[in-house]
Amino acid sequence: MKRTWFPVIVCLALLLAGASTRAKDSLNWRVKQNQVDAEIERSGLIPLLKKVALATGWKVYVEPDAGTTVSVKFKNLSQDEALARMLGKLNYAKDQSNGITRLRVYCTLPSAATQIVPPEKKDYRIANEDLVKLKHGAGTNAIDKLAKSLGAKITGRDDRIGLYRLQFADADSAAAGLQSLASDPSVAAADSNYLVDRPTPAQITQVPNPPGALFNINPQPAANGPIVGLVDTSVDPPDQFKAYMLNPINVTGQTDTPTDTPSHGTGMLETMLQAMAGDPSKILPVDVYGSGESTSTYDVMEGILAAVNAGANPINLSLGGTGDSTMLGSLIQEASQKGIVFVAAAGNTPGEGDVYPAAYPGVISVTASTQTLTGPITSGSANVGGGQPQLASYANDFPGTAVIAPGTSMVQWNGQTWVIEGTSPATAGTTGTIADLVNQDHLTLSQAVAQVMKASPAPSK
Image (cartoon, rainbow, N blue to C red; front, side, top):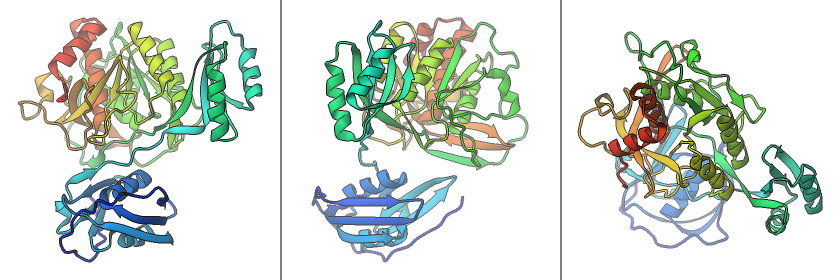
């Protein structure tokens, strides 16, 4: 693992300052440009580090009981200069492995920084956009008239179900538009549009290739098994896994940018196949991200609809972090009432609370254990070490979480073996297990779900 250390002067013992960040405080962190602007007056350490975690996407850890009061004002400093200015007599260290950066803030040693700092809550609302669903029979011209009257541009439309994405000139216009839409007799529902972060594992690491095959999958996909929907990023699996795929669907119209690590969707596809290796179902990949750093609830809804219309059930959603979209929640609830099974990740930030879509009613929400997936999560082979599964240090476990599953899986890509950790592979393993129980034990989907939830209840349950 490549490590780069950035030491700062060792501090004396400091007491945590309780001063809160004033409303005028600002932190503009431009990671790609390696530039930071800050204007902060008497902020406590934890509120500051929450802002840093949100702005950078780093995993931030702090030594318990360490603290300082931060008052700084600067522009265009490098990231390391900014950290030194903000942390004062505290030490910090950064290390990076496979694209994931960790920042450790401490008084004594880097290893003492064990308390994870969750990012400051992000406002996922896209300020100048609204979503609208028209009532059945409103007619395709109704949305054009509505958009014109509101001064909005239609940037996404699905006339089949009357779902539309409207873009306004600014946030105030969108807020006024939302009020008008809510009172319009032709409108069935209106809501803000929300960002959905591009899913990333808690950790991804390249490891030496094991001798022989990493895992063996039945070369004959289940003839009558359920189609598993994978709503995620693009997939690019090795050739030996393509026999288990249906033709991918892309709802964005954008081509994903190649990287030097397996895409998130590829890792989830292979993880699901591991969980149903004896009698695998076909998997339908649905790309809702394209080349974007994030997507929106509109595209996630379109992806879910595409998967459902193609016959996929269950549907894996190893993504999350979006705002609480009533329209996305209603879509999932309506599909659930018709028998569609949704499995979603609880998130990789401990104590974050509700994460959507995992927290919506009707969704099987999954957190991660320290175990490694070696088969269906109900089998003894998945319970490495025996005993009760232990919650992984990175895993969120909000009160509505239903299942705990192995948070580590091994996948193959580009001739190499990769270890992936997070609630994402835990979710994919759970979805694969549900399909495996249908294929191998001839259970119904509802019976398979009940068996998984009974066998591996989340700690919060």
